[in-house]
Length: 128
Image 1 (tube, rainbow, N blue to C red):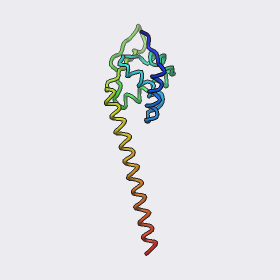
Image 2: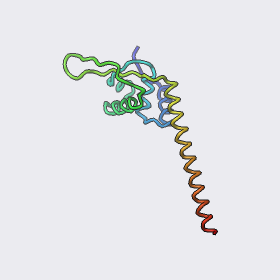
Image 3: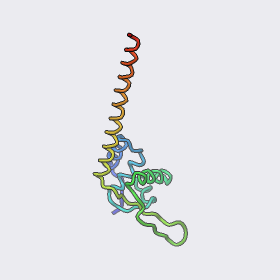
Image 4: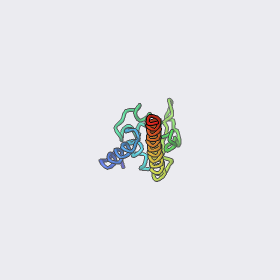
């Protein structure tokens, strides 16, 4: 069965993008969620991205430890072809994204409160 990137896949990728992933990383992740081992060439074809865009997206996913190279095959001579696989469950990825977002918001809330305290201190000093 040939792989394709459906309208539903596109909508999920857009949601990942809204959450904070880079657009191309989100598209590649949605494809990888289908739990298949894929080469970068297959990813390029299915998600309609150029090789450098796929390479950057895969690097991003590997830095997050969500995807890794599971094997390499060499066809005749030349560079080996790398096979990529999603190694983190979707639930763990979503939990990690959620934790990251909550942490960012908590930090911003703390910074807002710090500004409030500093302004109160400045106003106190002025009124003395």
